[in-house]
Every structure is written in C-alpha cells, then in structure tokens.
Amino acid sequence: MNFKEIDIPVLLYLSDKKYITGERLSKYLGISRVAVWKQIQKLKKLGYHIAADSNKGYFIISRPDILLPAEVQSNLHTRYIGKQIYYYDWVNSTNSVAKNFIKDKEMNLQEGTVVIANEQSAGRGRLGRTWHSPHGGVWVSIVLFPDLEPAYISKITLMTAVVLIQSLKSLFDIPVLIKWPNDIIIEEKKLCGILTEMSAESDRINYVVVGIGVNANIAREQFSEEIRSRSASLQEKIGKQISKTSLVRLMLENFEKQYDLLKRKQFVTILKEWKLNAHTLGKKITVESAGQKIFGEAVDITTEGALVIKTEDGKKVHILSGTVQ
Ligand code: BTN
Image 1 (tube, rainbow, N blue to C red):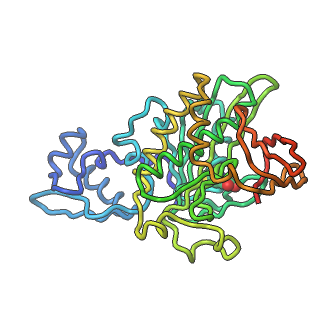
Image 2 (image 1 turned 30 degrees about the horizontal axis):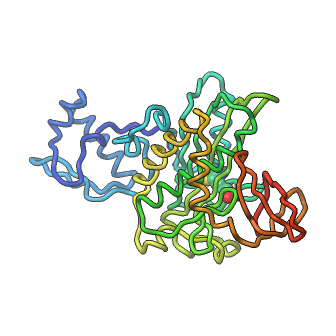
Image 3 (image 1 turned 120 degrees about the horizontal axis):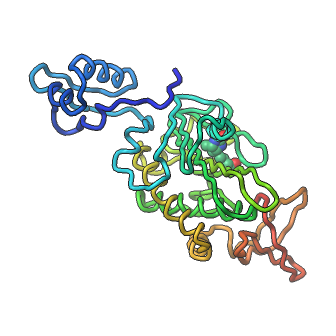
C-alpha cells in the first residue's frame, strides 16, 4: 500500500484517554455517522487499535508506529515548515520524491513542504552511498527555496545537524554528538544522517532538499549486516520504542527556528551550538576529501562551514566536503 496525503479528520478528535461518541464526531466534522464509521475503519486498517462501544463511542487504545500528517501537524507550532506534508507508506527516496515534486510546476510546492516515508526502497546517503531505510525509521525530506547564495549549502547541512541534536537532547537523555560534517553519532555509532541536495545558478539557489534519516525504532537485526556494527538506533539506546511523531514535530519546529536564524545571516549562533556538540574537534583524524587523505588535528570549523585541520607540518587546511574516517 502506498498512501499519499492521508486525510482522516476524525483523528483530530479521537482521544487516547476518553470515549467520544459517533454523534459528537459527526457534529464536529459535519459528516454522517456512517462517514465517521468509515474513517474509523480506515484508521483500523492503518494499525490503530480503536475501542468502539455502541453507547460511549470510540477511543484510541494504541497507535501504529507511522507518521501520519494529521498526527504530526496536530500541535505543530510552525509557520511554514510542515504545513504541507506528503506521507508515503513506501517510496524509493523521499529526497527524490521531493525533487520530482519541485520540478512539477503544477504542484506549486511551497517552502517548508515535507515528504515522509515509512520505508524507502532506494534511500540515498552522501557520496552516492545507499541508505538502509527499513520500517521503524524516520525518513524525512524538507523542501526549501532560500534566497541565499549557493555557498550556504554547507551551512544548511551544519544547521540541520544542530536541529537534530537539539531535538534528540530535549526528548531523550542520550549522549549524542555531531561528527563532521553531518553525522549524528552515539557512542561512536551512527544514529542519523543528513543528505542536502541543491539546484543552483552561479549566484543563487533554486531549491534545497534536506533529507534526514533517523534510526528510530529499528531493532539491531533490521540493520543490514554490512552496517550493523557501525549503526545505532534510538529504540536500542533508550530500551523502548519512541514516539516518532513527537520527534518529527520537534524536529520541524527546531528546523524552522534555526533556518529563520540562518536566513537572517546569524550563522555564527548556529555554529557556536554546532561546536558545543562536536565530536570531531580536538581529535586527531583522517579526512578523505576529493580522493585525498589528510591527517591531522581537527581544530576548528570556519564560518563557511569548512573543517580546519592542522597537519603534522603545522599547516592549516580547510576542507569543505569529505568523510572523517
Ligand atoms: C548520510 O549520512 O549518508 C545521509 C543519509 C540521509 C538519509 C535520508 S533518509 C531521508 C532522505 N531520503 C534519502 O534518500 N536520503 C535522506
């Protein structure tokens, strides 16, 4: 099944704590009792457990581990990020879907549009790598049309890492850190990845798609053997399943705050927070960049988002893109 923009308005009124009658729901929504019942059936198909009592009405016993737009958007305090969400049960890659949407001029996609998938069959990582995206993860892309120069792309990526750190730290008590440029790691294992893609002219950005992958409710066996020893999940670290909905809601709210700062040219504030949570700085590292290996101490990040490495001969090398080994 592949759902697009599932619209189930009864969700706005159903509660986890007390019954609401079918009559009330039909009054609130201005639809018949049969139409209410049909929406309840739709929810059940999606994995919601709903108690139904002929006198007392309905209430939610448990929710499935999926990210329905109606759930994410209820109580979402943003002005434009996540106001339009496209949800898919499965998709090749949310970044690819978002880029196709942008190219389809008839869709007139707005800044802040979000694409979410429950699973990705061809999730993409940095440097042409594949990104393993089973059920249980948070696979999200955010569409931006910033009025900024193309050089801002690396700042958007660093900013997104800060957004992830802020969101994870405020929900969970876990020691997450940023590995330059954009990996979120926990105890040396990868928890989240960011893939920022852009189309630009020489002096201006046409669009940016920020893809975020969080290994949320993923069990160890779900990781492919190849990445198992290097990957971590929230479920595993916290010891129980997390609410993906709360995490995504907070991520979108924090994203809007930081992106507003960036657009107001206040990257320095974001960078400060990046540095406070950096795993890389102060360490002796090897970076692979443009086919070259550079060894030295990671001493700083510039306001352009470049990693500064002090090599053994005392030279300072600035690297804008690469992989820390
Ligand atoms: C990396 O660390 O290599 C980046 C991984 C980014 C994965 C996310 S999941 C949502 C979005 N869709 C994709 O195909 N990739 C990004």
